[in-house]
Amino acid sequence: MSLLSASLVAVLVFGLFTQDSSGSAMTFSPRDMQHNMFFVAIFSLIMVSLAFAVVHDFRHFSWKKLPVGFIHLSMFILISASIFGGSEKEKVEVNLAVNSPVMHPQLPFSLELQSVEEQDYPRGAVSSVLIVADESGSKQFLTEVNHPAYHQGWYLYQINYDSQTGSSGIDVIKDRFYLFACFALWTMLLAAAAFLFLSLFQNKTKFPKGPVSIFSAIYIAFICVNFIAPNFFNADRVAVLHSPWFTPHIVAYMAAYSLLGVALICAIFLKDNKIERCDLLVKMGYAFMTMGICMGALWAKVAWGDYWSWDPKETWAFATMLAFALYIHLRHYYPHKHKLALVLLAVAFILLNICWWGINYLPSAQGASIHLY
Image (cartoon, rainbow, N blue to C red; front, side):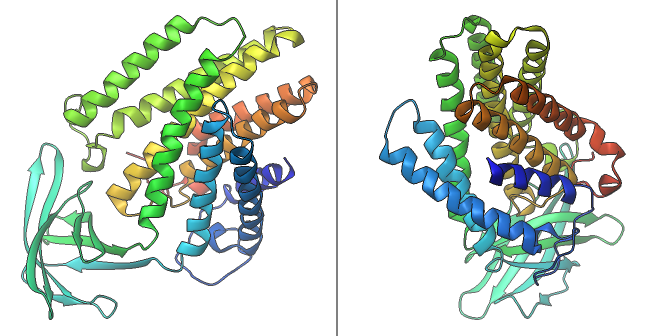
């Protein structure tokens, strides 16, 4: 509880500043939370706490608690990969012009842009890149937004394109912790879905399960359609939004915001002995929020090469997630502290609204968010 509270305060403080994680040395600057000693120390302690929680969850095995155990395990892997994997990640930014080979000292091969094909629908560009390596000869790859090329452990991401000069901005990334983070995110995504259904159907509170079941079926149908035909619902949007993750990511957040908003209304108008209904709504909303964050992270990795960049929107979404996690833990360990729980629920909902629309008015988000389209 205390570590969650400290983490929430730290993220809120850092969320007021525009983040710049281009450096590599440890610092006390509030503008580089990824290398801030205080932030790293707190999350190192959380990682240790999660390790004990995982051992406890699987030592006292229960099918009902299995999703929670996997969520704890996924968070442990993600924080470990973030702390220890950051220094192992290699990233090279290159700007390629047609028929002009580029040899960067950090890369074991040279890059040459053969051609660029502009697309009107979906809007974007497809770059044909020739990779020349001494030991394996040359190979030609196509790369575009949401479809990176891969060569010998390196991923090539199409970041931007200048139609006037015909040049392409390419990020070349080698991430040794890719599989760990990918496994953790998929595990958390599935565990959150299991947590959602277990919270709904194993809860003794009288609650209209039929509408939620219908909504869940519609949501699953949206996911299937988007993965089978990603452009089925797409309008003329920027290239990065043409992804099978787009609709399920947005719908998950819409469901989360709706459920958590209803939870606050129930907290205001229901009597203390009905707070269990708030608990159910918060758990369901938290599950949808967790799924939305996992989908966004997996999408970001394919689009830009980074699961998480502490973008202002991401920072405040994480703060909101911590606040509702704090509520769930408070209700679990201190079930009789109703007033404190309701105050915390109100604070969490305020953070949710800052993350949703209030972020646009914060100085840290002025022209700095990748979530502005």
